[in-house]
Length: 253
Length: 131
Image (cartoon, rainbow over all chains, first blue to last red; front, side, top):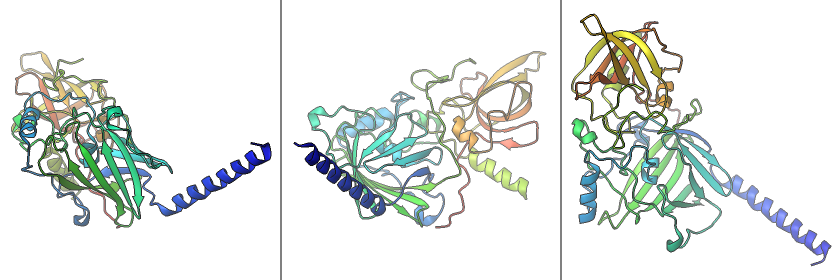
């Protein structure tokens, strides 16, 4: 290719690139910022209220056994990261920070150290045999009008329950909710959009995991825009004074 | 008025021992005890903040209590700063004691030298919405 032709091609590519970038910027909602999950199912504005996790999920035999295992005093590792459903579930305790670029959205959750990356550049998931199983899985996103549709696969099934409940808490008598496990077959489709004049983020989370549940289920979770707070570091293992199972706080150290 | 809102806030926080990180099953959440003592050390670290408090044992000696609160980020969002308490500060701690009988507890609230009472970092009060 002659230099002039190459330059012309480059110029065309740049022009096309900036055109699509500009068009995308203008078209998609701005979800950049710090967000705090609404706690529970009774907190805050009733228009933006979390729906509850299923209390009696349609478990497979494996799922029922795994749910019981997670409710024992043996935890799935107190510093293990969360699964994507738990990540987006909110608790009212920890914020997330969303960084939004044209081809990638990154979410930082205060309570786990690794970022959640949602690729919005049009790429597909890797083929199943090349998916490296991970706690958060592989997420792709596309905008459908005002809604970000996020598809996640490739989880490792070793995260704590999807409803965030901590194993062992059942022994305290204050938390006997059924534990909602996940496996490497977890497939999550989220529909995320701004509501309430842009002050809330709504995430409709549809969960299917045929190894655990005979029937898919979904929850709706809300996050409130909080420009007044910062996301802090959360290095879980820094000063953990418990044993490997999250029990028995040790002597002073 | 202010005091009663504070008390209510404290009660609400105490009613939600949901720290999300790990189990608080080691603590008897049906029991509350009050400790009056002196701060030895504050470990304002992840995953949870610990207060080391020296409490007279009634026999002329002192017992070192380990009091567990929420994560540093949670505390910072509910009125705490890393500098809020330091060694030598006199405090009154209300805590759920360990089931084991060891001198450990889960923080319900602590009254600090400037008279304020702070919680374990529970959910912040819902902001007024404009949407």
